[in-house]
Image 1 (cartoon, rainbow, N blue to C red):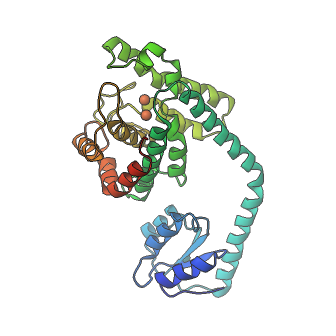
Image 2: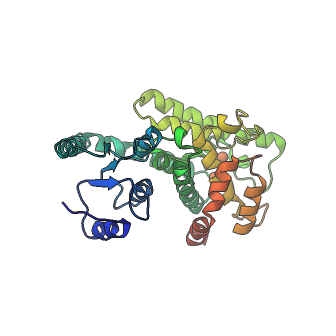
Image 3: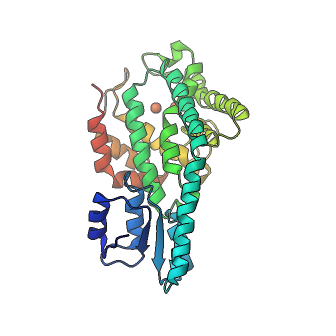
Length: 319
Ligand SMILES: [Fe+2]
Ligand SMILES: [Fe+2]
């Protein structure tokens, strides 16, 4: 067992030794315990370390917030050392039991990933969008979903694995395009209104595929998020989108996030009927469509991380 008095010391110790469990004081000098919890959660090396928060703070909202951000337990100060020891042992035992049980679901998880990959590959065989588009979009989705997870605005709508789930499913958004005839899907130019009506069905056709999978695999809960994304990624915040004409918060959050990442990347891509626009132009357009096409708060979150977004755009640019 080892201790640290502040954030810097804690990080220095974590860099040499990953502990079985962290007892974290809510009130640390410098950085707040909740902020530290976030840092641990979003650092791949540390995110699996169980954290028990310790505090004299009895504010029910702060306590709930601690659990929402992933703490395993909350210990009130002053505490009984023996009770603390029992709680630590109980937490470690629960984690060990979960690890044993995870051996079987590991197979399950890989079959889920395999299903996602197979569907994405199938769609990729007919879609003319590049793999780079899907890759960039996936990265943008991840950044935005994490921002949403951290934001109080969305906290009540978000489950612990939300960002991971939405990120892994984003590449399926256009799988319904497998059902669109070639002369429309690959038309070198703008679609006529009639052709556009056919193109719009990629949302409903894709969702039908997922619904059939849900009937066969009812335990795969991530399929309902996949359906939300596929069916609703062309809805608009003002209700003028398709296929359902949903508006505002009525559009699933996962689909609102994917819509921003998808359109943003499409703006910067060259098409037969339009040149590629710069990333600055894409940010401006996104801001212009704030509250009309897109969820305004999500746009703000996206713009707040414009540096990271620009880095992804540069790193994965089309060759
Ligand atoms: Fe689409
Ligand atoms: Fe797309």
